[in-house]
Image 1 (tube, helix red, strand yellow):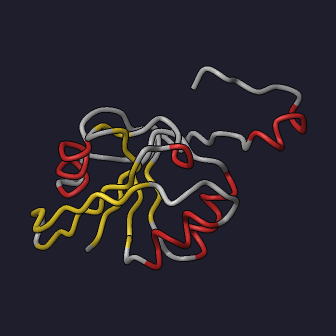
Image 2: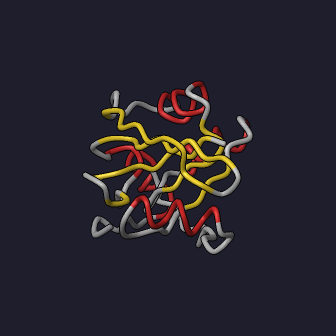
Length: 123
């Protein structure tokens, strides 16, 4: 199974779309068998979830993510785990042990922030 992590260096990035790179972890039988870093190809609506799914990701781990991206991942049968912090490798291992669950927090996309009348820029 292939797991993607939105990352800054080797730490889980706070915001999925604006991360420095994606770390792809290939896993088998609960172990990491390969790791590949891919620079973020650019943030534009709808692109990154399909890019990751097209590259074989079945799970995406990130700090925060917009609802549109979550919807696309759901359509592509990619499990979304957000609200994550810390070292990417440690979080992937925790996921493989069944210890990592999404907090389900959604970052509201910036262009839609006015719909709810508030937007927290401190994430």
